[in-house]
Length: 75
Image (cartoon, rainbow, N blue to C red; front, side, top):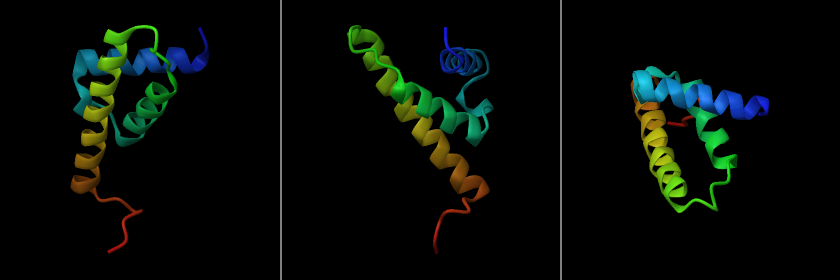
């Protein structure tokens, strides 16, 4: 198991035990990246779960950006 796989599993376990809102924005962004890189093409059910979780992570990142501000926003 690679370091990325271990990190992905650790972050997924944190989501399962504490919820997605318990992660920091940095952890959410990292999990999003790690999940995008992971190929579940041979398992349709896992691929569907991946897409749903990526959507939830994107929403959580957006919510945290709105709540705490994002230094990258221009306005």
